[in-house]
Length: 505
Ligand code: C2E
Ligand code: CA
Ligand code: CA
Image (tube, rainbow, N blue to C red; front, side, top):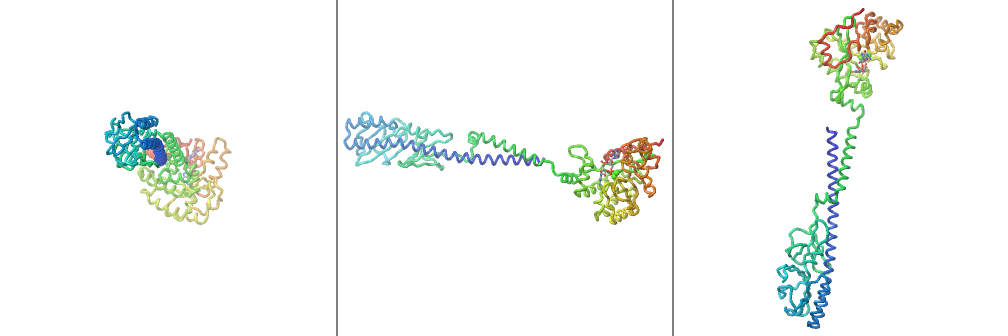
């Protein structure tokens, strides 16, 4: 679960970071676009005002000559030829001198009280036709030339086709936007581009720092790409986190999680069919279901030193389980556990075994320590002493896989060995052919001469059972009787007290 959560969190974080960066980039470009749009609006307005300036020059020349019919005609022509101008007006001492409109009519309601500023935005209520107007004017002597420009042309100049941005013309404290009448300036901080030649500026609202619409409309493709990258990263991270760890690490985790559990293979009296004990065999209970054979993890455990915690965990589990069914165990019941040589060599081994013995509620149990001979057993003085001390403390020592190892036989003199376990490879050779048991005969003879009890392993057939019974090998273990079973199955076996299949013919 944790391994899935981390990739999801990482993907979300990556997505958020990506969206953040994308949003900032879009914001920067929206700001740049808005500014460029404002500059373009300034250019448009300058073109209109250049016409007005030209018209004032023409009007001044007419005023200098004195306005008459010819002057009025010239003014009307100038107003008609310049595409953005509405009217041109010359006043002298506050009175109309000359106008481009027929009959010297006026567009403005009150020209006498007009402020002197060269550029003015007048609201709708100040004009005859009820539309806002922009005025450009010049003064000379006692006269002034007033040029009016239609709001429509100004709104066209402001109408830059940029989505989400609107521009306004600001002249002094008056503002004309692309719609509506002339208003007072807004209180908020606005973007502004001042014109060079004329006293006005173009204002616009800064684009918002975050905009979902902008993200979707302008960064839709990038968003999809980011989503794809985040999913890809999550998948890669998930794969990495869930990649199989080193076998040692997996095993260490399994021991800590209690996934290494004891199975029990019954040891029976081959002649009577009674249960004499069990051998504890480790199994890895995989979380996915099923059990893993020790053949695949005991070598790793031995190589990595994990065999020590593994065996300790088994000892604790075995003692607890046996205590739980202590009343069902036959007297002198054998409980054999396999120990590796490296564990026995540890200085704490004797102490551990004594603690293990002390943890059983039944005192009469026969605790067997199985030591394998399969790997070369380094039988030094220390090992002999350790096993002998344990023997003196009531443990039985069993030499496992006897005959398969490379150790010399000399240590059999010094060690107090209680059982020799004859390996399955010898037992499996027993068949109807009389020569087949020659090697096994010798091994059994050797054990007998040393007065050591024998346990036969891997008994699978009736022929093997008969041979072993004929040779008085009473302790037998093998699939012919029982396979290694989990604790719950062992309870069933103990309760059914089997006495079958084993009669000698
Ligand atoms: P082992 O101690 O010689 O254990 C006997 C093995 O023979 C077991 O295999 C058992 O399942 C198998 N066996 C028993 N009867 C028969 C039979 O009739 N036919 C056949 N074909 N096999 C039979 P398992 O459980 O796979 O264990 C393999 C080896 O792993 C053990 O051999 C032992 O050397 C090692 N092992 C298992 N558990 C432990 C442990 O807790 N500690 C240590 N150090 N070694 C362990
Ligand atoms: Ca064994
Ligand atoms: Ca064995």
